[in-house]
Length: 556
Image (tube, rainbow, N blue to C red):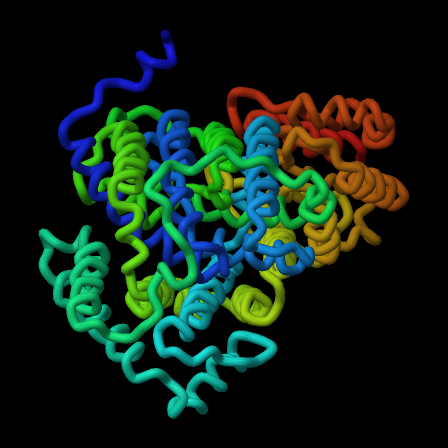
C-alpha cells in the first residue's frame, strides 16, 4: 500500500506526455535495434515492459528507461565477440537478464559513486566514437551501399569511394526524411514530435508513390500482439559474463547524469544507487518479454519532459501507450522504409557529435593528457569491440584520476603574521637552519604518487640541529595509509638523527589511532602530537608555542 501511495496521482499532462514518448519510441526504438543488427521488433518491445517497470521504481521520477544507441551497439558487439547469433532470441534474453543482474549488484553494493570516476575526456571520446558507429551502421539503409573495412573509419572511406554504387531511390528517401525533419524541427511547437512526423510523412509518401526501397517488413514481421514470454539460453551464460558487465556499465554511465539534468518536480532527492536497482529490475522484467538491454535514456527523457511530464506516470503511460499501439497497429510498422530509419539515425548521430563539440574543444584546450585520453578512447571505440573500448576507457579514467590526485597534494609554508593567530603563506624553504621553527601545511589524500612528489619538495634538514618542523595534517581520509605512515616515520627519524623535531598539528582521531597502532607515535613522541580542535589554528598555535619555548630553554 505504501508503494502505491508513493506513486502519486496521474494527470492528463502525464497521459499526453506518455503518448508522445510512446509514439517517439516507435521510430527510435526500431532504429536503434536495427543499427545493432537486431530485429526492429525487439526495439519496439524494449519500450514496453522496461519503460513501465523503470518508471514505477526509479528515484529519478521522470527518467525514461529504454533502449539507446550505445546500448544497442554494445549489445551487438558483445554477442558477436562471444560468437553468439544476435538474431537468436535465447541469446538476447540471456544478455538482457545478465545485464539486469549486474545493474542490481551495482545498486545493492552502492557503487554509484564509481560513475564519478569516469572522466569527461574519456566519456567525450567514447560518445563521439559511438556517434560515428551509429552513422556508419546505417549507411547501407540510407544509401543502399554496405561499406567494407576492418574499422569504422576505413568503412567511411570505402563508402565515399563507392558513391557510384549508392541506390538513388534510397538516397532520395533519406534526403527527404532529413528535410522533413528539419522543416518540422524549426517549429517550436512541433519540435518534440519532429522525428515522428518525419517518419509518418515520408512513409506515406513512399507508400503512395510505390517507391522501390527496402521496408521493415522485408527484414522482420511485426505481430499485432504483445511480446510473448521468452526463456534464456543458459548455455550462453559463461560466454556473456564480462560482456554483460560491459553493457551494464555503458547503460549506467549514460543514465548517471540524468538525475542532475532532470531534477524531480516534487523536490525529492534522486539516488543514483536506487536508479541502478531500478534499471536492473527493468532489464530483469523486460528480458523475459523479448526486450533488448535498456537503461536511462536522456533523449527519451527529454521528449517526455518537453511534452509536459510531471510525475513518474508519464513513463508508465509511455509503456502502456506503446503496448496499445503495437496491438492495434503493429502490422503497419512493416511499411516503414529502411531509408527513413536510416535518415533519422543519421540525424541522431549528427546531433550527438554536434552536442559534443563544446566538450571536445574544452578537452583539447585543457591539457595534453586529457586530450590524449579522449583521442585514444575515440579510436578504440571506432576500431575495437565496444566491450574492449569500455575497458580501455575505464583504465584511462582511473589513470587520469590517479594523475589528478597526485597533482593535488602539495606543501605550503605558513609564517606567523603581524598579529597573534594570523598566518600568511610563503614558499617552502630549500633547507631548515639550526634552531629554526618551520610550519608546513600538507593538503592531500596520502596517495603514494602524491607523497613521492611531496618528498621531493621536503626541505633539507642536514643542518637543522635544535630546529622543529611542524606539519599540519587536516584533510586526510579515514582510510588507513601505510604510505603515509612510512613517510612520517622516515621524516621523524631523519630529523631526530640531525637533532631536530617533527611535530604534527591538527591530526584527526583516525590518524592518531593509526599512528598508535603502527608504533609511529613512539617514534615521533606523544608530546609532539597535537589533535584537532574546534578552533582550526589552536593546535598549530600550541605547537608553535611549545617549539619556541623548547628553543629558548635549550640554550645556544
